[in-house]
Structures are given as structure tokens and as C-alpha cells.
Length: 568
Image (cartoon, rainbow, N blue to C red):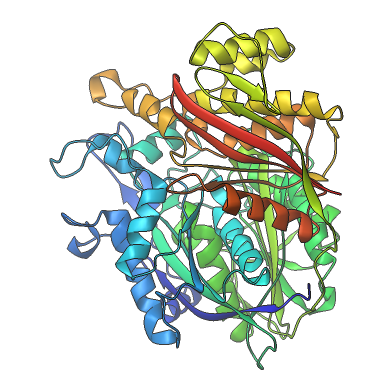
């Protein structure tokens, strides 16, 4: 299949610095920062962040704060497009790390909602615009924004859709801030990416929308979404690789289709944490990009989580159009071991391309190339795919390739029984949350059946879906911060409030350096799941994929339906 070109046709940014792309770009170019100190009575420590303030962004009886931001962002792109956003040829893709998680604690005197399902939130937003297609939620920690754009490119290249509306958004809450405070990851002052005196990250709120179209021919000046790659460190669920393994592999993949001489800069994650910035500097040097300018935008907005990968791409596009490399606010003197070309000052450029790089919990990393030149048109891999093994695990039974396994337990005890009887060589299992235990056991039984783990490879991907996200563990973490009298947020518990951690656990167990992605739907859809897994193979990102449905409402209510899809 000949690869069509995927071009950007609209964009917008809503943040504390402005309510359009141009307002935000001009504010950043002027050196403005939205970061300031906040003191919340229900948190023991102050924090520095950039937050959306004012009645307009508080939500109402119909829409939450999160939904208000997302819908306003989509409203902003409507005047820029010439197609019907409700068309069946349009797919909505939502990038978010925690969505409506603040509903777990209630708001403005309303009772807590114990079931803020991300897929249902996305369906509500799509329905607001009359779109009846099943929206996709990307919940892949900090790299979600780039993953959403990679998913959009694949959906359009496959011909399933003509347009993709990608929205990245997150709002801050006591839930999220307390978790980062428990990690001691927050800086008490505006962050300083790559600086010798950096103290940690700041958090932020924003919504950013970008619209892509499938075209046969690129018009002059249009932005082309180029090669994207998602790779895992296979190292640790909450700490970046000391060798930059996943970021390095993602960058090398992207560079295969890049005109290196035309790259203006690498816009990095640059969170200003000690290990993230060091890791990115190592990956950049290993990838042969040490002479390219590098910048981070976190000093203007903080870490906007699910919005970051979309917003920072849009700002980078606008900067290239303006022949500008935006400065890294907060940077003064280099504080990483590799001599990356970071500057606090804006610089000029005559190049037409840039690379966006992100990394996150669960060992996930992503890179993507964007260019104003025509780009390359190349076919997808001409391969056939098939299923080599399948497993279903419910609270009552486990069925491998149609054969019921001998078990005596039920619910969570069934998973422990399967582990002890069939695996029993990975004690970390007992430290995992319920979703990870389910995914670990299901994947182990699958791989045992396949007979070859392909350990230590980048050729096997992990692509999982569910309905509840990490809601089971979200509820558990919420209990630790319900009141100030019993306030004990745990970093080990907080990290498991990201559903993609299960993909990281599987990657670490098997030393898989390939793609690891997690998506949320409003209900199980085997056809969509398999098609998205097959697209990873057809795009040449893997030779086989562990994929399927992995949902966990609580320790006694769950469903795993996984399979190994392989090129034949």
C-alpha cells in the first residue's frame, strides 16, 4: 500500500498564556511564563505550576473542567477547517494522562464520582460535535501527545479515515500534585531545564488540538507529519534509562527518513528533573544529534502532561515558520554530561524540519519528525499477519488457545495461583498493582505457549486497551489522600495510577525495547484492537505484537483477552 502524506490543516492552544496558537507563540517569544506559586489548603506544601484560572474554566453542571478545556480547543479549530467534523471519515483521538481523575474526590461540594471512565469522557466530547465514531484515548504517560499523533498518522495512512482531530489535555488536581510531591519531583521555583541548578519539574494545565488530513500531494508550506517511533527502555517503571536507551532507539528510527541537514532543532521533553535531562542528553549524543540545537518549553508552561506532546509540536511548528529556535527559559549553565546545544536566548534558523522527543513513566519514549518539505512517500511493509497464541483470563478461569487451564481459585487469588503454578520466578509480581498482575500473568502464559520469548529485542511490541484505565489503583491512591488527618501519598502507589505501567512491566521482564502503547475505549472492540496492532507491523515498527483487552475494575472483577499477532 502506497503511503499517503499526512499534513496538518489546523491547530490551537489554550493555556494560561493565551487562547490561540498565535497568542501562545507571541507570549513565549516575548519570554512570558505562566509559572507561579500556589498554596492549596488541602495540600501540605506549596507548589509552582501554570493553572487555568477564572470562572470560564471551572466547568459546570454539564461539563467538567477537563471537558470544558477540550471542547473549547475543538471549537477553536472549527473556523480553520472546511470539512464536517461529524463525518464518519473523521476520528477523534484524545491524549490525556489522568483525564477526569479529580472527580474521585468530588468538586465544589458535589459528591465524588467513583467511575470517571476515560473512554466515556471521550465519547461524550465526540458526541458534543455530532461525531459517532468510537474515539480513542491515548493514555501512555508523558508521551501520550506524540503517541496520539502517531496513532492518527497510522489511522489516516491505513485509509480508515480522511481526517484526525487530536486533542491533548490535562488539568491539575490534589490527586496529581500530591503524587508528584510524594516523588519529591516538584521544584519550589520555576523549573530550569538542563541547568546545573535545576531542582525538578513544575506542573501545568493546557489543551491543544491539531488536525491532520490524508492527502496525495502536499501544498507548499504545509506541515507533514513524518516518521514517528515509540520505544521502551526496558529498564525501570519510574526512572529513565541511564543510557537513554529508549529515546536513542526512537531518535534513530526517526532519522532513517530525515534530511539531517534540514533539522532546525530537537524539541525535547526537558522536564528539569535530574535524570530526565541527563538521559535525553545521552540519547541525543548517541543518535548523532549533539551538534543540533536543543530546546525545552517547560519553563513557560511547566509539564502539561497529556497536552505537552501536542502543544509543544504546535509551538515548534510556529517557531520554524518564524525562522526561530525558541530559547529554553530558566536555563543558565549546562548541568548535564553531554554538550547539548541549549540556550536561554532565541536563535534564528533557515531549516524546515524539527524532531520532537518525549519520555515517561513505564520506560516509554517517543520521537517524531515534522517537516515543511514534501517528505517521502513509501509503502508499508508487504507482509501478512496471523495469530500465534491467544489467552482469556476471567475471575473464574483461564483459557489458553481454547483449552481451559486447571485452577481452583477465583478472583485475585486465581492470578496468584496461576503465577505460583505456571511462572514463579519473578517475585516483583507481588509488588504489582492488580492491572499489572493481570497483564503479567496473561503475557507470561502467552509467551510460554509461543515457545520463544524473543527476549532482548525491539521487534516485539505491546499494544493494550481497556475501559477503566488505571481506575482500580486510582481509587486506592485516592484513599491515601482523602483527608489531611490521614495524608500519606505513596510514590510506589502513585506510579501505578498510570495504565501504561503494565506495558513497562512486561517490557522489563522480557527486555523488549520496541513499542509499548496503552489505549482506552468506551467498550471492547476486538476488530479495532487487532487492526491497530497490525498497523504497528505494517508500518515496520515490529514483527510481532502482544495485543488485546486488559481491563481491571477491582481485584475480583477483570478480563484479559490477549493474543500474539505476528508477521507471517
